[in-house]
Image (tube, rainbow, N blue to C red; front, side):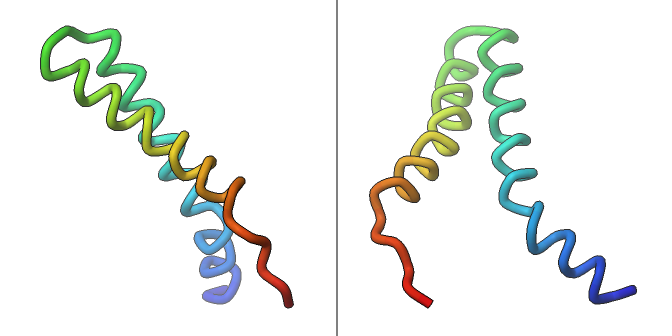
Amino acid sequence: MSKRKSDFWHVFAAPTLMAALSLVGLVAALVGDGAWDGVSWLTLGIPVAVMGWYMVRPARRS
């Protein structure tokens, strides 16, 4: 059972974090202005930067 739980988080940890950052960013953009704008830019920018990083980096060879 421990192996199965470990596999679950190994696969879904990064997408869950990206989804949480996106949700926080979208809510922050709706909540208010000022500092909330900075929070929304930062939390919505991180997933975009991560996707860009994985698009431009060279593929790993096995």
